[in-house]
Picture 1 (cartoon, rainbow, N blue to C red):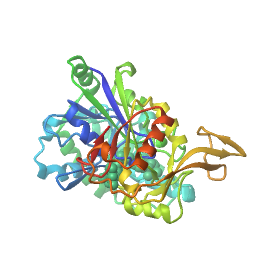
Picture 2 (cartoon, protein in one colour):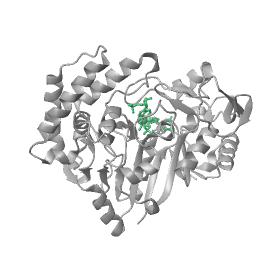
Picture 3 (cartoon, helix red, strand yellow):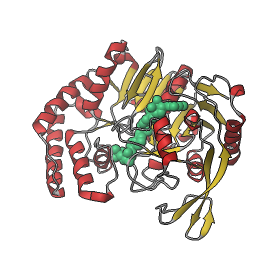
Picture 4 (cartoon, protein in one colour):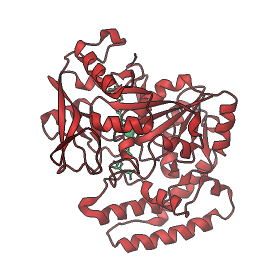
Length: 423
Ligand code: GDP
Ligand code: IMO
Ligand code: MG
C-alpha cells in the first residue's frame, strides 16, 4: 500500500496533531518522521486536551500502531514525562508505540549547548525552543550522535561520557553564562533512559517496508512547518531538520514512489513563534485580536505567537515543494467577525512586483500586496456541513483553491476532533 503524508505548510502549529487524530481511523500505522520535543501537537476530544511532543498523534486510537521514525530526535526526559501524562488513559504503550533504533538521542548537554548557542547570538538568536534540537542534529550529521539502538550495547555509557565531555568543552568555548548542574540532569536522564529501554525498539524501515507489502495503510506525520525547513525555510531562522515531504523519505525509509497523498495543513491566517522574517505580520489591533481569539500561545514554550494575514505567495511555494495533493484549512472560526480579510498575493520587492518567494524576505526588502475580502459574522464552531458556510467563507475558500490549484478537503472550525468539516 501507498504511504500518505501530512505536513504543515507555514511556520508550524497549523493543527497537525488535531488532523492526524481525525484521520487515524483510516490508517493502520501513524509514523513521525522528523523533529523532536520542539513539537507540540494538540489533540482535543471528550473535553480533554492533550499535547504530544514526540509520540505520534494516533496514540489515542485503539487500533493504530505508532512509530517514532529514524528521523526523529528523542529526549528520554521529555519522553518519560509524556508517557507519565498518558498513564491515566490506559493505553497499551508497549504494543502500540514502537521506536526506530536509528533515531538519535537528545542528551542533557545538547540542551545546554542549545542555550549557550542562543545566548551567544544575542539579538540574532533563532528563538529556539531550547530543547537541544539543533545540537543533536549537528551531532547526527557530524557522525558523533548516540542512537536509540546504542542503548542495547554494553558500552554505550562510555560513548555517552566521551561525547558529554566534548560538549562541556564546547559550552565553555561559547563563554556565556549558562548555569547547570550536570549531575542532577544526568540522574534524571539515566532514569528516563531506563523507561525508554522498556519499550520496543525496531528496525523501523524494515517494519514499514513489510507493512507496505502486506497492504497496511500508513500516515506519516510531520512536525514543524515547511517555512522552518532547514533548506527551504527562512534560514537561519529555521529548525534543523527536513520538515518538507522529502523528510518523510529520509526520516522513515519510505521510497519517494511509494508516497500517494500529501496533505498540506495551513491556518486561515498565519502565525509564527520565535524570531525571523514574517512579511504579513500584523503589529496592530487586528493582529492582537487574532492572537486573542485564536489563543495563539506556543504549545511547548507558552510564548505568544506572532500573527498576520494569510501569505499565499509563501503557501504556493510550500505547496509546490511538497507536492501537496489535498489542503486542509484550520482555524477558519477565528476569522469570524473581522470586517475585512486580507490575503497576500504578491510582494513589492526592491521596486518590482513579484509573486514568488525570493531569497531574502527581510522586512526592509519586502512589502506585501493584499487582495481584500469581505469577512463573515457567523460563528462557525457549531457548523457540521459545508452547506452551512456563509457566502463570504465560501468566497475565501474558492479563491484559495483557484490560486493554489489544489482542493481544500477539510475545513476545521474548532479545536475539538468533532469540529472538522469534510468537503
Ligand atoms: P500542531 O503543532 O500543528 O499540531 O498545532 P498546535 O497544537 O501547536 O497548535 C494548534 C492550536 O490550535 C491548538 O491549540 C489546537 O487545539 C488549536 N486548533 C486546531 N484546529 C483549530 C481550529 O480549527 N479552530 C480553533 N479555534 N483552534 C484550533
Ligand atoms: P510543531 O510541530 C512552531 C520554531 C521555534 C524557533 C525555530 C527553531 O508544534 O508545529 P528549534 O527548537 O527547532 O531549534 O527552534 O523553530 N519551532 C516551532 N514553531 N511549531 C513547532 O513545532 C516548532 N518547532 C520549532 O520557535 O523559531
Ligand atoms: Mg505545535
